[in-house]
Amino acid sequence: MKLPELKIGKLVVKVPIIQGGMAIRLSTARLAAAVANEGGIGLIAASGMAFDELRDEIRLAKKLAPNGVIGINIMVAAREFKGIVTTAIEEGIDLVVAGAGFSRDMFAWGKESGTPIVPIVSSAKLAKISQTLGASAVVVEGAEAGGHLGTNRSSRIIVPEVRAAVDIPVIGAGGILHGEDIAEMLRLGANGVQMGSRFAASVESNGSEELKKVYLRANAPEDYILVHSPVGLPGQAIRTPFSERILLGTAPKPVTCDHCLKKCSHKYCIIRALTRAQQGDVETGLVFAGRRMQEIHDILSVKDIFAYLKREMDAIPD
Image 1 (cartoon, rainbow, N blue to C red):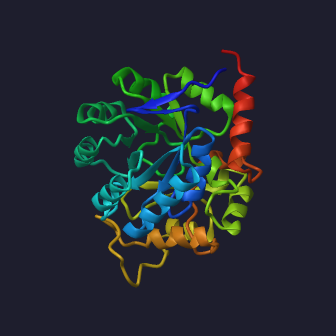
Image 2 (cartoon, rainbow, N blue to C red):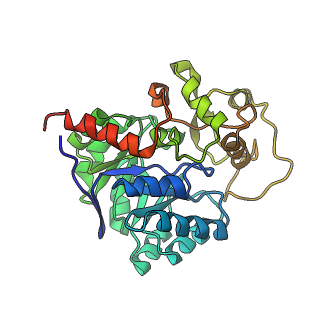
């Protein structure tokens, strides 16, 4: 099966793959640029970043992938959501992908600057609203995805519903690891896919070696659990001592608060928990991952991941 180009607004990429924006600091400039250089769209996870740090990451990604397409992923739930988006736009970011909430204002910011705004949605209704407000595309994320979830339904069910409801590009997300998964999404009406877990477990991912070992060890269904996030959404995570404490309600409450979210339950600090895991403390860190991470048994380079996916796609009949 031949991979089609993906068009979002005026952007055109040769490979219809968006690398998921994984916070905190898992997908930074190095990973985003590597994906962009392979013909996909690389996303910098902007949640939790200071404005100057984000500027530096965008500049580095553009330097490493001067001809590639680089975007950001940002949680609408972040207190500095507007500042992050406007900072990225000022730096000439190619597109903005926004999830964990919904903002009507962001479409005006994108229209003013000519920057494509791509919301993450989990229903045909929200996809249709997004199109009406000016979205350039929608990422349709189902229950298979890692991190914050907006639904308990499969993306395989939601994507055809969204395709029937909107005319803008549809990006299928959640549980996509192999060429057959990409082909399935294309057959369901998607114009492309977003992949998170496969790129989290890559050489270029900014996660610590200890974190990547956790990814490879989590190879059974019981290794994955849903935790409640202080953001107010369920989050798909790998079972660790800390995530089990969240389930039991014994996770330590934050001693200090950085006020990083618009609304927070303060049951535990999710930013610090994700950061601890990213830096290698997997005992007291929170590890977000999609359930199909259990099928990943090797840490591959982005170049090898793309080569593998293309080989699989070539073997699939049109």
